[in-house]
Amino acid sequence: MALKPVQPRRRGVGGLIAALALLAFAGLAQADDVHAVFEADGAQQVDPDFASGSELVDRGHRLYAELNCSGCHGGMGFGTAGPKFRGNDRLDDDVYVVGQILIGPGIMPSFAELSDAQIAAVASYIRESWGNEYGELNANRVNEIRTQIAGRSD
Ligand code: HEC
Image 1 (cartoon, rainbow, N blue to C red):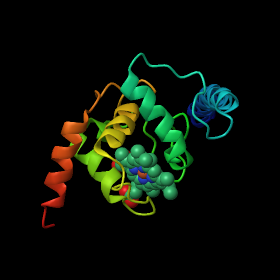
Image 2: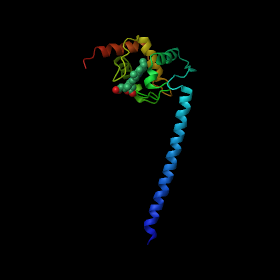
Image 3: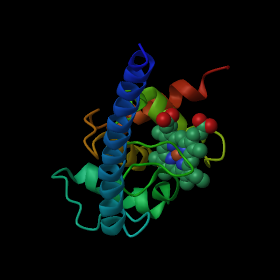
Image 4: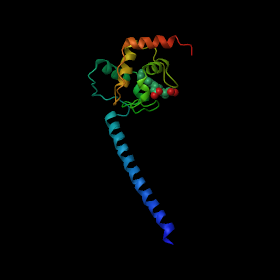
């Protein structure tokens, strides 16, 4: 009888220890990962050896650093002051992506002064990097979206 309340408690503690061990392991694995990235990253720099095989995306990669998108979204797409781009489903929506770049939500500055070709390049880069596969955008599509957004009353 006296063992009855003890047994479930011991199982509970064992389970808790196992869960904590798993969490600690997952945490360490993740910390290692991030550490490795930041070592390669030089804090928020973009990957210097980047070559995508697409001229447009490579141009976007250079702009991403020059315009300091990397300062707020992370050289490796993990985000800092701004949202992460790595695995960010919102980038699938081209109207949304171009709209955010043109408007500059919150603390993000507007980049409306960039040419359609420059916006196409940087948008293509963030949509096609870090495992993202949302597709490239060309300047014509950016122009369409720019016109659409400029004509919007809301
Ligand atoms: C000063 C920091 C800063 C800079 C520089 C900056 N952003 Fe942002 N960006 C943000 C913040 C913060 C948000 C989220 C704003 C909000 O929703 O309130 C954001 C949102 C976005 C979004 C929408 C993401 C989402 O998940 O909703 C895109 C796309 C984007 N930025 C692209 C860019 C690009 C491309 C550049 C460079 C040309 C850039 N940003 C430069 C801070 C920045």
